Image (cartoon, rainbow, N blue to C red; front, side):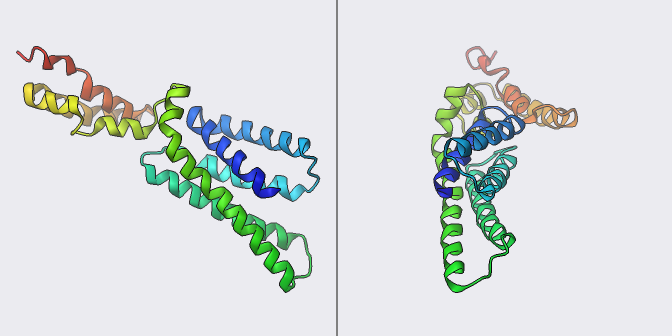
Length: 204
């Protein structure tokens, strides 16, 4: 039953972290864990501890997702956290180790690992839909807009090269300035790149 709860709760935690923020995701996920364990009538405290550890590790990694490979690494680290947590909780139970218990723990920790790894791949696939549903723009989308091969930027470079150079320079200035005051530098860079995009119609 642990692995059955790990996958949906970890996935939900990562979705909330993408849609809102990490603090809200942590509180929401802990409440969901409590609710699910009560509904399922799980009296084993180790299950709650396991879920809190794993989902917290997943959420805390979701701060600044700037590449799709980052989501895979989030899933990998989360899976490892579940794997280690299962063994740690087993050792804390003070049960005498034997071959059968070790094999059972290995089986459960392996299932927990894959149940923690899979949400990273799920979020990777549904991220564009999450952005549309919740009306958020992730750093991945912003980086895609910053690509100089973006059709609009390429057209600006060809038809208004002076404006294009000005926009790139402005972007390089505003990003560190925003970072210095705690603002979203990447968002500001995108804004700088596109702030004069209409000049492609009348470059003169």
